[in-house]
Length: 401
Image (tube, rainbow, N blue to C red):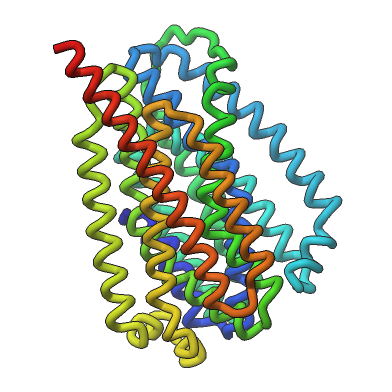
């Protein structure tokens, strides 16, 4: 949770130092990056799950093979991404109404650096080497904020904001690789069975694409369909919503390796899940209450008077952000106990959200309400899945007794 402060401060600094139009341009590329890093989130979910399961089953001797396997796949993926960029960069810039092609190039380079960073972080997370994981995250936070302040004050605007993001990830990647190289692994590594990856990565892909889409697709579609001023306001609202999401993200990230390891050992997961759920509910309630009661003061965080025009929508966005946070937690937990079919329902809900915004985008409120409706329906589905899991576990324990 502390490490995610950097992502918020980065956006906050931009909101306060850049003009609303420049900020909207940066924010849409950050949202595009968030959508692109869905594969990185898939990678994280898969690797953490596999490493945690191996740790629980005492099969860490396969870890060296796992690292080699994913490094090869990431190298191939990077080449594919660069090829797609060369073929489609003109169309993407036209869709986003951006004239400078360098912005998209920096975004793609940032994505590639992030892929490799996530691999090494995920192994550290799965092994519960949390000190090294935390040090890597804090370094990213400090360098990201420092560089963006320097480039913004230097007047580099959109270019400076995006390049500082890339540079901080490149530096953090070097540091994380160095810390990973110090981890002691079993001396006799064995071959890694790639079929284990396929069992996890396909549902993980649908889960993370769906969850990531909920807080990125809306920004991209708003930039395309709404006027420049409305898109700028929506970017500001989304920034406030990300405060809620980032505050909760660390809970789900911590729950995943712990729940996976315990489940693989046949231990109970109910206590750690309920503790995580309680913490997320408290965080969501605190921020939602603040947004409801003091919307005009919350908007002052963004630093410019123009954002006060969105005062009446702050509370609605707080509801949406809280629903996304709860969906992220429940989706992650259900995945950790190997109820993988739920991933496809999450993805389907994200598609419904995108289609809904495509047809209903007359104003800011309509876009937010579409997102709230789809998020709430998904929450009901995930809550039912979670209740069913614990009910079956309870019945199983009773039958043994």
